[in-house]
Image 1 (spheres, one colour):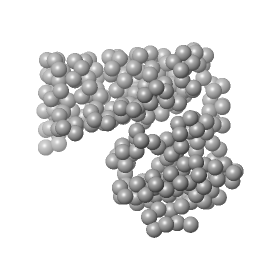
Image 2 (cartoon, rainbow, N blue to C red):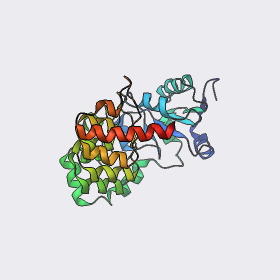
Image 3 (tube, rainbow, N blue to C red):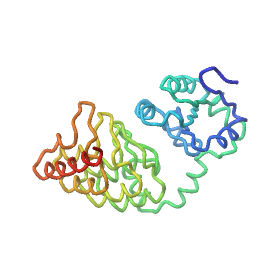
Image 4 (cartoon, helix red, strand yellow):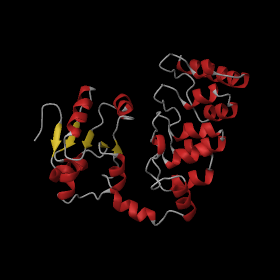
Length: 270
């Protein structure tokens, strides 16, 4: 069954739909604890902290599939994505409950997590427990993931272990900041390089429109500014108030680095 605005996919049709849309953005609109217990492989939890970012930054041509508990909230979210111009939007009739009862073809991620738990090194298990994390992927206080927490604390060995376990590189916390931003807070250039090379977006914009480069410039962290620029950070990005990293430079060293980078970037796009 379908509507004129978005497609409604039944549980028995889901495997075929996912196979036909391998690049689909799969969104789980359930609570975080239920998502942690089990979710569709590759799904991203959808909530009030990230829906605006997804609506504004995902390509409108990318297929979107949304599921919730029983297929009610997913329809509201589907309408929202349609309103924002997404061309292919679908939701799951009956939600997670119906999918589980139908005997889902792709197994819930909880099965993979059980296997993964056997591979988590002891020192990481101790660290996770010591910082009140349920596992290597579930967010904790303020929406910070274990990767963000470790980056903020400058704990390189923990960051490396989490990356090897496939930590979510695109996750953001309640302020819209990613793990790279938290590494900048720790003022550890090597850690910033590690996360950027792993694939954490270097030009990610947080809830206020600020980038890691802007934070480093405004916090008088010239070593971080230098590393970010060397990694390709864009100095021309502006906040919602039209301020660039150069405008935010809080000391002479950052100012000089950003002046040179801004001139070069401006010439390149001219």
